[in-house]
Amino acid sequence: MEEVNYNRIKYLIKQCMLQSETTEERDELNGYQNSPLFQEHIQKALIEAFYMEKPLTDIDSTQQEQILVAIKQLGTNRLIRPLWRRALPWAAAAILLLCTTPLLFKKDKIENQDTPSLTANIEWSSVDTAKLHKPFAKDPKPAEEKAILTLTDGHQIDLAMLKDGESFSRGGLKIEKQEQGNLSIVFEKTDTEPSNNKMNSISTPRGGLYWVILGDGTKVQLNASSTLKFPSRFTGNQREVSLEGEGYFEVSKDKLRRFVVNSGKNDTKQQVIVYGTIFNVMAYPEKPYAITTLLEGSVKVMAANSEKESFLVPNQQTTLGTAGLQVAKADLTANLAWKNKLFYFADEKLENVMLQISRWYDVDIHYTGSVPQITIWGQISREKTLSEVLDLLAEMNDIRFDIKGKEVIVRMK
Image (cartoon, rainbow, N blue to C red; front, side):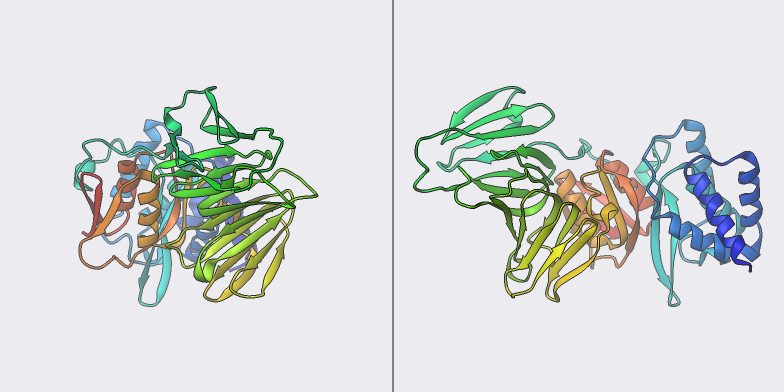
């Protein structure tokens, strides 16, 4: 097959994803997908299209019905055969889904062939969800702005209870609740430096996230189940904080005082050293690795248990774990998906997928029997309710979710 044919197919699919195709281009693509000669090209182009960025948008009811009809026509074996061996209606459905909505893949391993299959992130209002899981008495909502501030004297403030614009002073700090879940912390002027510069902390629970502006102007966005510890005052030649979980940092520039983020434990214990830059650190204690992703400026990442260190430039990342400190090109789409209100799964184990869901929706995950060995490809809006996300996963995988209070029980169908 001529290479020009693949490039042309790739172009046509891209046009469809951007919803910029003409009627002639759509007809041309339909002609390719109806021909067995081009099925491998179509499959390859579809998989590459998964990595294209495309805004998550709602679709109208007519498109929903078209997609649902296409899905129902696929039959019960749609997830286990290579794409080019499937009946032509499935190829047509894949093209339809690709050209109208964001993507969700499921990856199965059959006869040593790894072939992602495709569906879409759609509104499932017309799906019979009772067949997919037992409904929630109250459907958990996505993570929202909530956190607990703990001061050096042990005093705790539930930030969700503060009104926008409300402020107070305590322990040398002036704390003001700003709009949209922002907390501004100002170091109040004193004649002497504190003799015992203890650490304050701000912690997001499961189902929570928060922005905080530190006394030096540095902004930090905390993901769910994360804790940032910071002193009552930055003293000496550096500004030092500690992170457990995940945080997105926009560090205020200060050439005289470097900013240091301590994170991780054991094999993942590290320091990130900067003077003014933008980066993301993922260092959850249950993860066997920590990932630092640089967007702007430069940072130095130091592994605490070895003498190895790495300097990063924008669009690079380090991964620190049992294999030591590794540097690679950053996967910005994956590593910043949480900040952009997306679940992004690229060959992700189901267990890891459910761990993210547990944090985001504040639910406990349990399995009936062993954990299903399923890997997921896809992107789903984090602004959907839990039942919408579970419906999508259940519909396109051989799994079922049963709900008991705040527990999600996962089992094979």
